[in-house]
Length: 516
Image 1 (cartoon, rainbow, N blue to C red):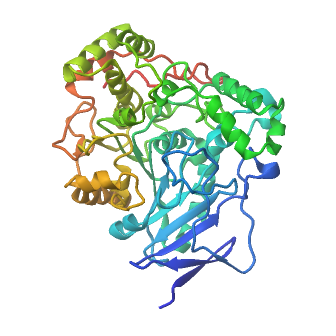
Image 2: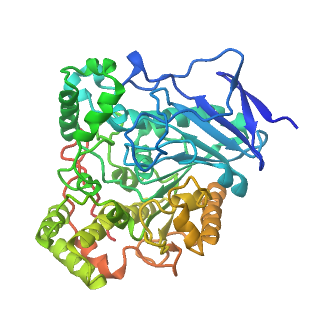
Image 3: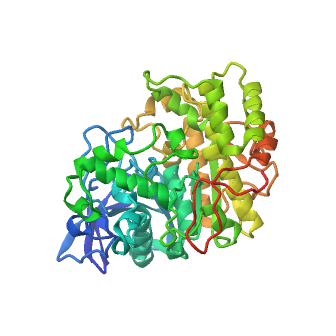
């Protein structure tokens, strides 16, 4: 048996690698031209064809990013990163396609192992798994339109534009890899799920996917043009230039250093009113509206949703607290909450969190609030709004008590991919100490791939207000939000995450005033 398999696409011939346990990998396929030189900070351009047969057996580097927990310390990054990877059981047939969009706060991430490995999901679910790199940080989300004039009007949200480009590539090419271009499911965690929310609101992405799995979606973390322009101006100041076109010649290392200095302090502050970071911008062209607004208007009713969050989202970040940062006081936390959801709701939520966790410090209760505000409530409201607009949705809650982490942010991702015990996974020892990890991984993989096949992950469709939220890792089903905080969240008055909207669009609240 040959150790390679060949396919032909319009760009040219590809040789993929036959995997030891079955299936074929095609890695490092360009879906756009390298965004370097004159194409840096410009929309993705169609890939160029190649002569001969291209070796697609090895993964290529992820996009430039600062060192962090997402990648092994010796990882080499490159601006020439717009590549797609395909894991397929067989190049013949028409299987459901699952397209992974990595998270990482729009600043880190990789489409390659050990961060992303589609082997187990591909084999276990008889699906074609696709991953790809997209631009992140300032290179993917710096907003130059306001400070650079009309010449830069089409350069907003380059990371999102990369995602649309790869979805078009999949539409045109995936049949050659054994995938069904009419049965595409996008799935992503954290920023990846937030990006899916944006794709739902983007006319250019319409019709390119039929199902979406949103795992902990921060759909309210979208910045106004004014905030994004301030961030862009500071980036230019940090690297010592005055005009956007000069960024084309700035060493990428200088851009990475400068982008870290320009953002708000912690992950929570970035999502609160006044916060800023790299991420989607409501520019009115690439992203014309907020995700929840698009869902409420019925624009996404033809896309089936599987949406959920983790019980203890932000508590994971307690492990990475900086010792030189003074812990917040109760008054400071309440002030942040009031600025976000209104005084009355803030007071009621604070009391509810204190009852649920009487020994919780102000810092701990702040993390409880942020977990709900950034992830759990958006997931719940997205599901409710989609149902009310005529769509179908299933909702879940990840609630496994992983040792030392609980159901922290992102702890379910390795279970969904079946790579939870891979020694390269930084949480492998945590999963090894939790006796239910193997069974839970099988359950989540089965649910995700069943949803890709049929739109049904295996439990009751969601109905607003019903106790139908499937629970992974604990008893269920449950209602979301929990009874203890349902009424305060129902009363919450959201301050606008986006300060102003482009002409022709109604004001955009971070989360709409729908019932919870």
